[in-house]
Image 1 (tube, rainbow, N blue to C red):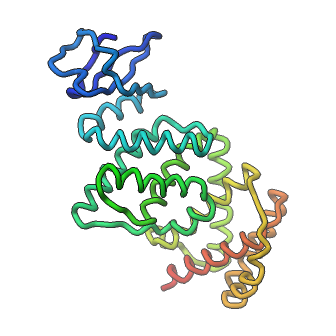
Image 2 (image 1 turned 90 degrees about the horizontal axis):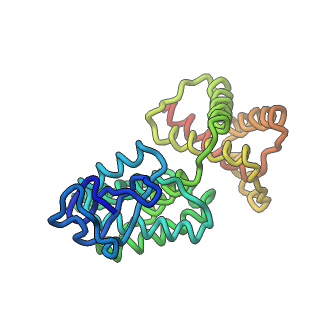
Image 3 (image 1 turned 120 degrees about the horizontal axis):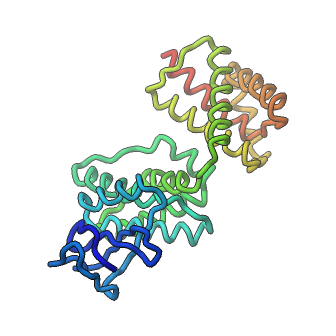
Length: 280
């Protein structure tokens, strides 16, 4: 392998046997080397071959800005996720996850810790990915001696979720269309314009995104154990529940699917929150 570009003493750009550019890492592999020199292949610990030119360039940029420790822990998390979930992940997760961990650790050192407004939804709808997030906290603790709360496990889980979802443009359009249709029903029913900067709106739209993705994929489920709680919620938030009835009719007529008790419960809660926050 011949060095095409040196990013630092431990990272270089070269070509694999097929002539494709790859990034290689290894302790001191580029130390006192120049472009055109041969690499000691026995010293290479990791080889990264990203699928798009844009991702490849971005990865190179990050490697010049972020210490290798962060890429190492991100690599451990990604490998654990692949084995645990049994799924292929988009190459871009190496970039997004390394950058996220680096930024989060730096914020923590500055005394800043962010709450995850979506933790409730992530735990419920992405339970397997959330378990990966919890394991990731252990890897981060081992590498940087920092113990993050569950909020951070939720953020890490979302990076894995996003790396799983390599949707075709048609599916992305359908998800967006469903989100827009349901949010329009709520907007017209309550005659309001949402405060799109509010956390409540962000939670509401994210919940709709999760629902739309499951509706399209057919990964829908019933949990009748929530019926008693639904009865309490619909009594407490009657107007929001009536709005859910409008949504239920629309989804049934247009997508041939009947909302479960669980889905009606969560929709009622999210609608109540977003309407209350908007009006207040």
